[in-house]
Image (cartoon, rainbow, N blue to C red):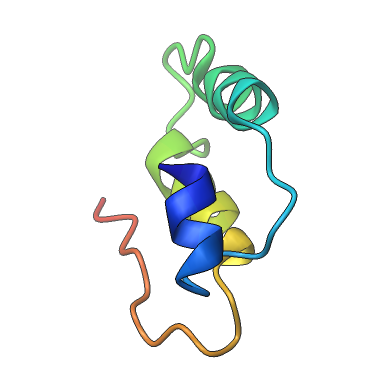
Length: 63
């Protein structure tokens, strides 16, 4: 999916599946009871950062 997205200019090329999944996993580890930490917002920020400048869709973190 990452290769197809890069070929369609949906995301920047060079992203590896393992590093992406590891990054998302690390953002989501143990939110616990901290109301000041929103892993969904951070994952949306990460995904939006991958997007190509030409790609119009923005991922909503949806709290």
